[in-house]
Amino acid sequence: MLAYLNGQFLPRSAATISVEDRGFIFGDGVYEVWRVVNGQLFETERHLDRLKFGLAELRITAPDITRTDFLRQIAERLLTESDLLEGEATLYVEVTRGGAPRTHNFPPPGTPPTVYVTVNRFKPPEELRARGAAAITIPDIRWLRCDIKTLQLLPNVLAKQAAMEVGATEAWMIRDGVVTEGSHASVIGVIDGVIRTHPTNNLILPGITRSVVLDIARRAGIPVREDAFTEQDIPRLEEAFLAGTTTDVMPIVRVNEQVIGNGTPGPITTRLHTAFRAHLDASCAAGHAQPTTA
Ligand SMILES: Cc1ncc(COP(=O)(O)O)c(C=O)c1O
Image (cartoon, rainbow, N blue to C red; front, side, top):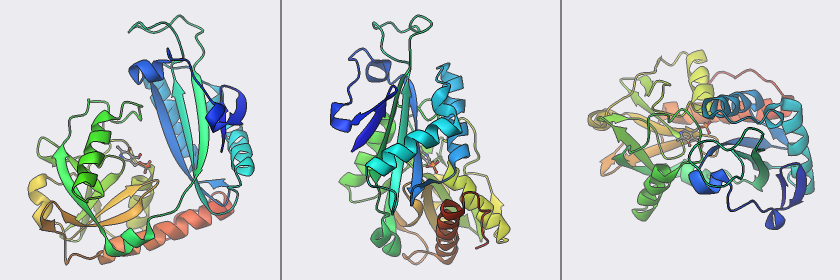
């Protein structure tokens, strides 16, 4: 597999960074992940906007990688040379504040950022989607800027590991009794026929899949309230699902010991997944399709 690192294309195994890189030392950087279908990036601009936002918040200057034409050129070469122009893939971009002797304060002006891009083949988890996945709940121990997609993912790593160790797929994080999001996906529920999810603020990552799915739901006339549900509401959930770049819409049929609905993927979830998948395929085929209705 080929990688792009600081202006060079090289085999991933040959891509190396300094041990003084601030990504390695401090987790001082951001990342972004795109879904790719038949060589086309899904929601190129929304992901780029989130990357630009994160870089600006952390005051990291990396102008080239946030340009659409620059990113597309790198993506095309990586996908072509990695034989990923057909089928599904993901594109990963990471930007750190660069390599410099370790000090907490920023390195001297002019220190170049580290920019790393790579692609991977991707297989959507269709078997799991058909039967529905399980989740656990776990305290949300993260900082107060979860809206920045930083490399500092330890709470997310520990949460996902805790889920895996009990045979679950995702961990729903709970802050002050409220369900915020999963370790790498947005959490969406249905209560009294209304779609409920945490509002976008500093406590969650503004998920791009979340936003696309909520648009699809609204167009289909399904009521949506961006108002979080609580841990106590979990027994009242008629349906629940995850939304994320590598998750699409993933039904959740059990949370801890609580069965959700009748324990199989619910009708709103299934409808939204079908419409989301159609939109993903259409927009990657056409470039800029509008969401279809569910
Ligand atoms: C914490 C968190 N929430 C939500 C998401 C879903 O975001 P998106 O739909 O943009 O992939 C992710 C994706 O990695 C995530 O890490």
